[in-house]
Amino acid sequence: MADVILKDVEKRYGDNSPVITGVNLEIRDREFMVLVGPSGCGKSTLLRMVAGLEEITAGTISIGDKVVNDVPPKDRDIAMVFQSYALYPHMSVRENLEFGLVLRRTPRAEIDRLVAEAAKILGLEEFLERRPKELSGGQRQRVALGRAIVRKPSVFLFDEPLSNLDAKLRVQMRAEIKKLQHRLGVTAIYVTHDQVEAMTMGNRIAVLNAGKIQQVGTPLEVYERPQNLFVANFIGTPPMNFIRATVADGGSLLEAKTFSLPSPAAARGALAGRRGKTIVVGIRPEDVVESGRSTRGATAPVELTADLVETLGDEVVVHGSRGEDEIAFKMDPHNPPAFGGKVAALVQIDRLHLFDADTEQRIAN
Image (tube, rainbow, N blue to C red; front, side, top):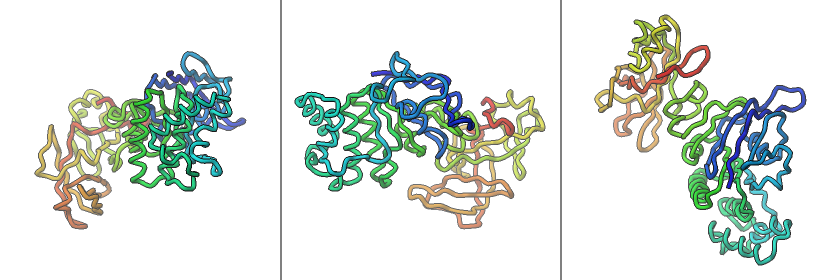
């Protein structure tokens, strides 16, 4: 097994601006690290540089105790699973699984052992003689995983492997991949644009935007303490509400356009020197409740007009407004408000997230 260390990694094409800038990241031995971000943020490029499929412009990449900048992909002791299954259609499942081993001139007895072991782990034993066209999407993805498993690599690399599957199968396969990684005890780097995948699969997640890492931490750390507006907006479903407010009363009051909120007690020291300045207040939908519901800690009342009600089964998401300020929040599904109706809501003050309006960085609280 091995850890993977990226130090000051940069990637640019020709004389253009870099697509990856100053990336420093340490993936620990046997860790499941997820790189998550919007399309075009550089996460797949970063993964391909670890694999050796893209050259780095600056910095170093180490796998184990070895710098691999100039090491070809075949010698990096990695295995990669792509978004496309990339199976040979004219070969059986068995032949697809053993293809890489045959190229490496692995002894036949060892090939048979490794293929049988991978097929058992992935539940493919009864499909070994079938061709890819005779398999479902989930079964094809298992074959692609099996082709990586038989190599016994130090590091697994996954490049959005579930994007071609339907929603239900994605849920099933992400659980299987996570259990498989834990069973094999191998280091894994997983790329996805789906923040739900990132939150449910990763031991830690690295949020990327515009070629830079915005934050690294456990899913709960990133969710509870986003370090900037981008991370706060990207992580969480429904996304966080953002209200621009002016700091008043020595830092103890936040005045939005149509209502005021007391500031969190833990943030008042940091806000004391910002009197009269504009900040961005982040409010997660789950931290707003209808009046009368039990809460912990201080709350502030806000009356909202229901502009949209989305029924999700076990809850409804109400998109409410008060003048120009908009707040989405969750309610019990059995008593939703009517469109245009008034809702008395409570904002949980100690769970507010505060950001500098200019730098977009988190204000300590």
